[in-house]
Image (cartoon, rainbow, N blue to C red; front, side, top):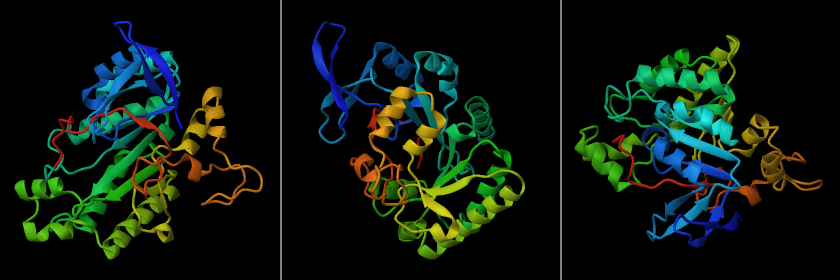
Length: 322
């Protein structure tokens, strides 16, 4: 349970605010791409307002206890000028960077050109290191033109440009059947005919083909001096036979490794480590993290993320992704 504290608003009013240690910015919208200035203003003010997407009720989020910010973006370039200030404020952070090549299909119509996004990825990695910039190739969508072989070819081509710049590739398969808005968009943009919508979701066989291809790609680069892990995001399918793990995008293991000198953060993470004689669901290693205590219960059941507070708002992202 995150701590709640009292904060003072500009008009002098005192109110209660959630004070998370880990902030997600954001699963709901692309804050780095479109709201970097707003975000920095809120950090300077010390709090932000978050609107519950289900009941539209506003609440306050204080950054007083925040140690780590996890950024999610398809174009973090607008945030780059603020990184010095973020560092000076004492925040630790890393990026979930979605980098797809769907330019021929125009599935992400308002993201910058691929070359610019690759250059932004390079700049981030050169500044932060490859552990703190995670490459996301997601979601993977299949159409008559986007076969598993085409998807693998495009990811392979991107990997040649990202060599050494990351240590993890995260992917997921699109969930068309669960989202009517996605179905409408795919039909409206003539990506798929109504009768072809179910085929956009990869079958278990197609998932295996893609996972095997990514494993071969990873093994190729490992032989050439670049090691990276493969993981799926919020996928129930077991692809461990291909060397693919279930990811935790909000990841305490990464935080513990990347920010070892942040004593307050390390103390926070230590609360959730397994003690002697206890058993980890995944590793059976004493001293590992107990994800039964730490899992974010606000996310899907197959999501592996640990608890954080997301500060974004749905339906505010101008990328226009189909």
